[in-house]
Image 1 (tube, rainbow, N blue to C red):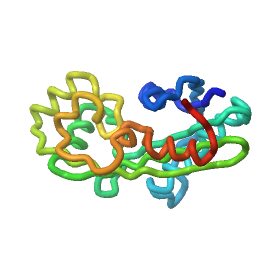
Image 2: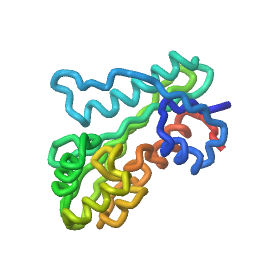
Image 3: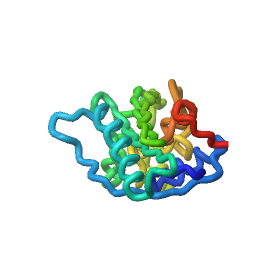
Length: 190
C-alpha cells in the first residue's frame, strides 16, 4: 500500500526512501500557509502539517496513509524565512553567527480515518561567520531558496558547530518521529 507524501520536497521524499518507504506517491498540495491572528510559529507548524495531510486525503482519497509536514526555523523568536535577496541572507546568517537557533518540524499522518501527529524541536549552533564566507556561500546558489538561507545537508554543514535534536528534522522530516507515527498507526512501510 503506497504512502502519500503531501509535499513537493525532494528532501522529504529522499528521507522516506532512506528508512525503507519504497511505495511512495508524492502529491504536493496547495494550502493557505498564512498565520492566523495571534498564532505563533510554534502553533503554526503543527496546524500546517495537519492541513497538508488533510488536503492530501481530500485529493488522494483515504485508502492510503497520507503524511503532511511543515518546518520553521526561529532565531530569538524571529521566523527564518527564505531570503528575498543577498542582503537579507547576509543579515540572517550574520544574526545566526555564533548563536543557537531552533528548528520546529511537525509531522501529521492520517491513516484509516485516524490522525497522528508529533513535533520535533532541534537546535543548531553556527560557528562565527565572516561576511566573505557568506558572500562565497551565496555565490554557490544554495542559500537562495532555503529557509534561514542555508541547507544543513549542503555546503553550510561547515558552518554548523553543533546540533541538538534531529538532523533529519532540520532537513524537513524527522525520521525517528515519523517512523514512530507509522508504527502507532499500524502502517508497515518496509
